[in-house]
Length: 503
Ligand code: TNX
Image (cartoon, rainbow, N blue to C red; front, side, top):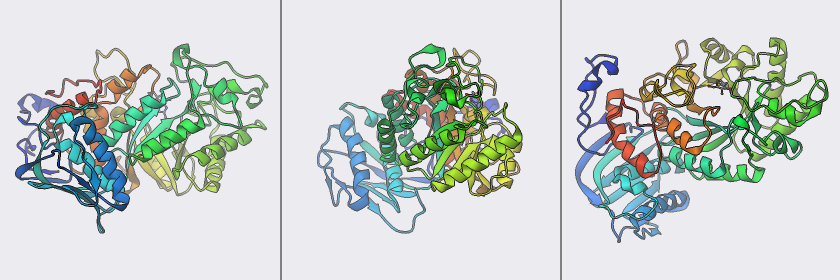
C-alpha cells in the first residue's frame, strides 16, 4: 500500500516484528486508515462534512449500492440523504477498471465513487464509511461531526476469493447469527461465505426428498443441545442477504466421510439396515458413507441436485476430508463420479486438500488446510487453490495460551499469525491461488458471542491478506488499533489481542 502516513515499515528493521513490537509507536490519529489497506491512498487538502443538505447520486445498477450506503449512513447520522441522479456523494459505473476495483475521491465539496461493476462501487462505499468517524457504524442515531478527510484512493483486490467459513454443523447458528457475520464480512470486503452444513454431529439443510436428514440428523449438536437446521427457504434468504452485500454463499455438504448424522437418519444408508446413533461428541469420528450400498449414490445425487437447485454458486464444496476408513480406490472413484454429477448440474467441484490424491482434471478447486503435498498434487491435476492453512487461517485455534476454549493442534493462532503469511504455498505459482479463507470450526464454539470472539479481529487480518498486495504487520497493528473502535461500534465482542495497542 502506498500510504502517506507516519508508520511505514523500515525495511532494514528486523524481519520478526515481535522483536521490535515495543519500538512500534502506534499512530496518534485515527484516520484515514481503512482495513483492508487500499492499493494507494493519498491525503488531500481539507475535509468534507455530511449534513442535512447532502444527497446521494446514482442511477442504473449503482442505485442498490447507493441505497445500501444510505441505509447505513441514515441509521447513525439521522440525516435524510435522499437518492437522486446526481449528488454530493456520486456513485458512477465507468468502463475500464478491473472487477471489484474502484476509485474514491473525497474533496472539499463531496465524494465520487467510480467502478466498472456494482461490487467495486460497493467496496468504494465501504471505504467511504471507514473514512468517517467510527460512530458511523452505530445502529442508532448519534451526535457526531460527520467530517471526512480529503483523499484520493485507488484500489483493487489481490484475490477474487476472500472467504470466511462457519461450521454450523458441530453447533447450529441461527439465520440472524449468520446475517450479522455477513454484515461484518461486507464491511471488510470479504466476498465468499462458506457454510459447512453437514458433519457427524448434525445435518443443517432441509433436503425435501430425504426429510429425516433434518428431523433426525438436525435434532442435536455437540454437547447434546437441540441443534437445528435451515429450511430451503431460509437458505435462499441467506443467499439473497449475502448477494445484496456482494457475497456468494458457498454451501458445503461433506462426503464421503463426516456423515454420521445422515447415517443416523436413514437405516437404508447402512450395511446392517439400521440407523447409526446420533453423535454429540467433540472428537472427529469422520464416519464414512457405505459406498457399496444400493441407496448411497442415489442419496448423494438427490442431495446435490436439491443443493444445486438452491444455490446460484458455480462452485460447490463437496468436503472430501479425512476419509480415513475408505480405500484410496473407492475414494477416487467416488470423487470422480461426484465431479461428473456436479458437472451435469453445470457446477465446478471444490474440496478440502485431500482431494489432491485423485486425478480429477481441471477445472476444480482444492482448499489447502493441512497437507502441502496433497495441495501441490491437486495443482498438478489442474486445480486452483484456496489457501486456509490451519496455522494461519483456522480460527478455532486458541489465540493465546490462556484462552478459555478453542483447539490447539495447529498451535496458537494470534492476529499476527493470521496476518503474516503468504497464500502462495512453496512450489505453487501466483496464478495457482485464487484466494484466502478463514475457517471457524465450532466443536467448542457454542454461542454467537464466541463466534465474534474467535472471528474478529483475525478475520480482519485475513481480509487484508486476501485484498491487499502489500502488507506490513507493524503498520497493520497500528491501523487495527483504530479499527477496533469500529468493531466496538458494530457491537463485535472481539478478542483484544495484546499484540495490538487498542485505542
Ligand atoms: C479438521 S479441516 C477438520 C474438521 C475439524 C477441524 C478442527 C477439515 C477439513 N477437517 O473436521 O473440525 O480439524 O480444527
